[in-house]
Image 1: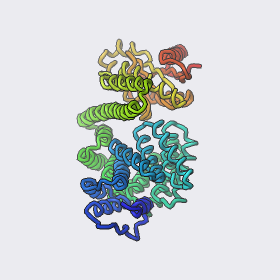
Image 2 (image 1 turned 180 degrees about the vertical axis):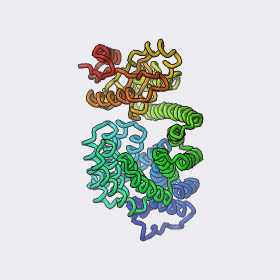
Image 3 (image 1 turned 90 degrees about the vertical axis):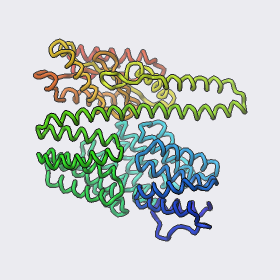
Image 4 (image 1 turned 120 degrees about the horizontal axis):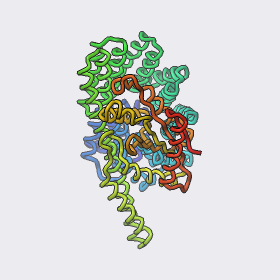
Length: 555
C-alpha cells in the first residue's frame, strides 16, 4: 500500500469521492473489494460494506500498512453496526500498527474510534482517556478540527454522568469542529445528540430546532437512517405534547427515511415507535401490526435489546386492548430476554477484563524477560489472581435478577480502586423498601417476592448503564454510582424513589402503595468499602427515622 491509499482513507471519511479511487498498481482482488467496501461505508450502506470488506479481509496482503487500514475500516464499520466487541479488537490492532508505522494522525483518529467504542460500552474512564489522548494529538499535529468525534463522545460521557452544561458545550464544540473540517455527518450527529439531550432534560423548545437542523444536515449527505431517528425523536415530542396529528406525520416521515437507508436496526426502532403511537391512540390492530413487524425483524437480526424492548411494548399494547393473556405472555418474554441480555453483558465484561489482564500479562512478561523485574512479577501474579477470581464469580441474585451480595462486594472494591487511581467521584446508595414486613404479613410472601422483583426492575430502568445495582439482603438494595458526586447521587436517588412511589402496585398490593427510603454517601479518598457502606447505612436510618419515602445523604 502506498501513500495514495492514506489519502483515499482521508477523502473517504469526508465523503469526497467524486474523483474516484487512486490508481493502485495491479488492482488485484483485495483492492477491488476494499475500495468498493470503503465507498459503500461512505455512502452509509453498511450491509454492502460488510460484505465487501469481509471479502477483502480474506485476501488481505501481509504488509502492515494495508492491514492497519483494513483493520481501522472494519473497526469503524463494526462500530456503526453497534458490534462493539469486534470493533475494539480491530481498532486496537490498527492502533498498534499505526504507532509502529509512525503515522500519528491515523493513530489519533483510531484512538478517537476506540474511545467512542469504550463509551458506548459504558466504560467511561477508559473511553475518556482515549478520547482526551486523541484530542491532545490532534492539537500537537496542528489539526484540532479532526477531533470532532472525540469531542462528541466526551460530551456523551458528560451527559451520561448528568453534567448537562458540559455536555451541551461539548456537543457545540464537536459541531463547530466538524463544520470546520467539512465532516457533515459528524456535524449532524452532534446536533442530533444536542437536541436529544435537551429533550431528555425536559427542554423540548430548545431540543426541537436542534433536531430539525440535524435532519437537514444528515439528509443532505444521504444519512437516511440517522435523520430518520431524529424525525422519530421529534414525533415523540409532539406525542408527549398531545399533538397526535404531528406525531403521526413525523413517525411516517421517519419510516420513509429509514426504509431508504441501510439500517434494519433503525427500521426496528421506527416500527416499534409506530406501534407504540398507534397503541396510545387506541388503534389496537395497527399497533399490533407494527409491533409484530418490529419483533419479527429484531428476532431475525438477533438484536436482543430490541427484542425485549418490543416485547415490553407489545405487553403494554395488549394490556390497553384488554387482551391480558397475550399481554402476560409478552411481559414474561420481555423479562426472559432482558435477563439473558444483561447476563451476556456481565459475561462480556468479565471476558473483556480477562482479555485486558492477559494483554497486561503478555506485556509484563516481555518486560520481565528484558529486566527481570521482581515488582512486575508480583504485579502479574496479582493480575492473574484477580482474573481467576472474576472467572469463578457467581453474579446474580436468583429472585430479582440483580447482582448478588458477593458480586457487589467485589465490584465495590474494584470501583473504589478505579476511583482512587483516576481521581473520579463515586457514590453509594442503600435502598430499603418501606414497611416490607406489612406486605409479607398482609398479602403473603409470594406477593412480597413479586414486589421485590418489581422494585428491582424499576431500579434497573432508572439507572445508567455504568451504574451497578445489587440485592444487598432481604428487602435492601445497594447501588454503586461511578463518576457521581453526592449531588448527582441525590438526583439519581430521587428518580428511583419517585419511580417506585408512582409505579402501579395495584396488581400486587390492592389499596396500598409501595415506597422506599434511600441513604447516600460519597466516597472519600482512602475510605474503605466497609466505612462507605456504614455511612450510607446511617443515612438510610436517618431517612427511615424522618418518616420514610425519602432520600437522605451522609454528611
